[in-house]
Amino acid sequence: MQICRLIFLAIISVTAASGCPAQAQQRYCTDGDARILRVEMYPFVPGADEIVLKIKNLFEDGCPGLDLQIHLNQNYYSPDNTGILAADADVYEVDSVFFDDFLKHKNPRPPSQSILDAAGPAVPFAKDIATFNGTQFGVPHWICTDFLIFDKAFPRIGAIKGPTDAAQVFAALGKGPLMDLKGSTTLGELYLSILVAHYGSAGEALKRLDSEGPDDYALGVLRAFTSMEPPGFGRNKKYHQREGFYPRQFARKSASAYVGYSEDTYYALDETARSCLLDQCLGQNDLDVALWPFADEGAKPVAWVDMYMMDARLTEAKLRDAEAFIKFMMSVSTYEALLLPSSPDEGVPKYLLPARDDVYSDPPMAAAPLYAKFRTLIGPAIPITQEGLNFKLHKISAILEQALPTSH
Image 1 (tube, rainbow, N blue to C red):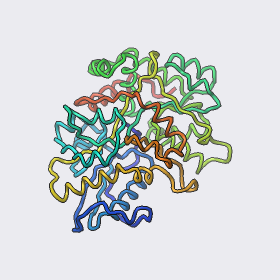
Image 2: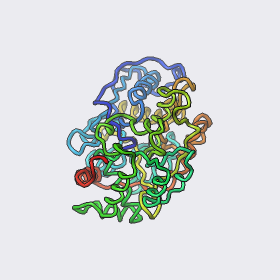
Image 3: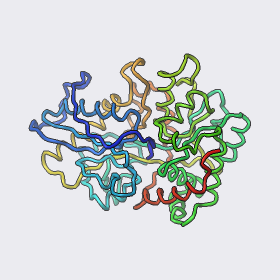
Image 4: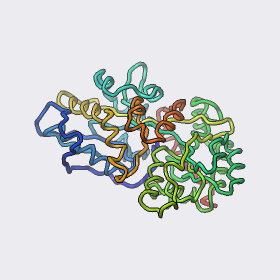
């Protein structure tokens, strides 16, 4: 969900267009009249501005006359009237934390079987959470959970069993992990992950999320996480607001591990590729990944899914354009174009996790070595949604902000 928790873009509308040779000959639309398609896209992904321009260029090349207007809203998770629920678009990319709210307030149009067939096989839990009463309302696009990304030089880290074990392992190493423990969305989701891991199910966790005060066990774990980190990290507002700050510091060996989403690996590898002296930072071959056990009962990861939903008012040509856009975004070739550099000299993999399952066996994607590991680890993750869940996470976060230290 926070599938990324980065704050770097105001609402923008991208209007420039140019051709892309790789897909310039493909046609996605049959209409040729001048028209607009408005898409509210999930904003917190690495290189969002670059991705948006690439999407616009590729799709418009195959849709003569169409002006694709993509908006990225930095207030996406805001519980007030500036968030995703207040947006007005033709196609929405919706975090699963809003799924129930979207059904109630937007009454989205279910995708046709043609779209579902073109979207390919979804990761099972992603399809489950996009479905209500037997009808699939969303087309899953990205999936995410918190991973433990660590330096292979410290193999003990990969076998950590829970917070108590983690404290002992990192104390013995003398080099703790980095985690972003600031921000209302971030804190709320971490807190919910602890509840799920400790109490064993989404249902039990949600019961406790409704209580007025924080759960003693979950609060204690968050305090333990804070104390494990190197001094000054974790609870710093300025660091929280810097895009990719913690994984970039991990790449520079400021810590032995980093806890975050798979796409945060991009920032670590980008730091190594662009900003480090030779052999001074961690490279892709130095990294390994595991699940981060949020409770001493072990790892029971919570999954978040970003999915495409269509506005209920779409008719005729507008509907055809919306369907064409979703099919385009869900194609294996589009995933490749957005996630993989065209050459080693042009960047590193974005390491966002596709919700389309057969992408992981696609040879170009499989060549990025961490993708297979991430996909295996996230397989048993538990997706959670509930009406008002985003609001509840913000509410508990405000309480946690007062209960946790600013830094140590």
